[in-house]
Image (cartoon, rainbow, N blue to C red; front, side):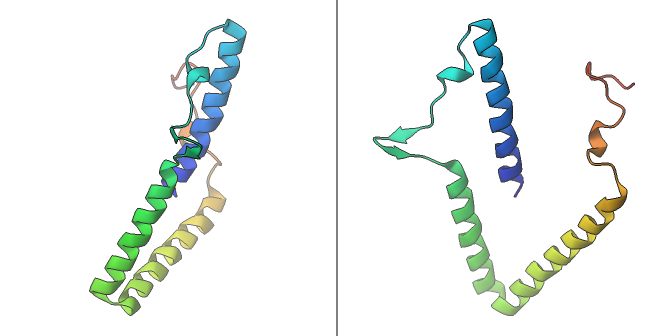
Length: 105
């Protein structure tokens, strides 16, 4: 989940940097190409999903399916609880009180 979140934002930032490069007439990020093997494109995110699936299945085998599902349900329950608490907090709490120069305002 974290990788997906940051990966999505890295594409947004890279797009903005590419737009700046067009304005300045330079090429740094615009030269980047996805790694390929012929016509096949590599996606690192797929490896993370596969590793997570293998890890989850291995954990379920070692501790038992029932305890594993209880653990997953517990994590999801805590996440839903924290999600409900987020109703009372600002949208981007870490960005509160920070100016464009990175100093407190």
